[in-house]
Image 1 (cartoon, rainbow, N blue to C red):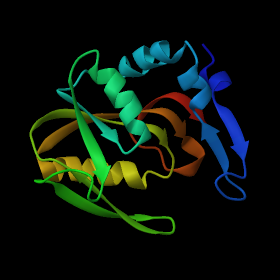
Image 2: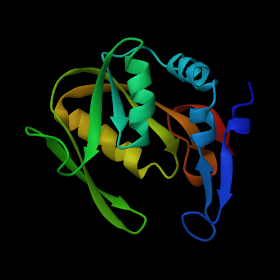
Image 3: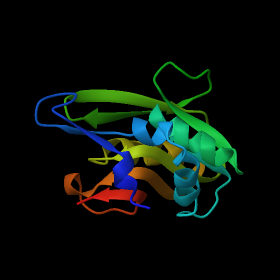
Length: 158
């Protein structure tokens, strides 16, 4: 299936010059379960799926419903203690993510992979929290925005 037909491009959102990839049409469609299966099949099943706040939760939850647990990687102050924290740089500032400590094999899940800053921070955070990262999977990989790294995706924009 041509998955790009279910992604709406919104020019100049959230700011001028940015072409936002809106996943809402796919989420509303009857094709969402198939997309979930195809994404999940891209990776070896882990002990846990780590969903990145917030749209990564959508896919990680769907994956976990088919096997494996769900771990939420949240913005600072949204998880009860104990938590492990990672500060990271954004294009215009910084942010902090948190995860509860544990152990086991994990796959990091998000909706879009762009510059890689968040994904790299989550990987460092998972390792610091005691998890073994075996893979990364996203719905959309914006390859033109980053150097190639090992991330699996259903949709790629070159």
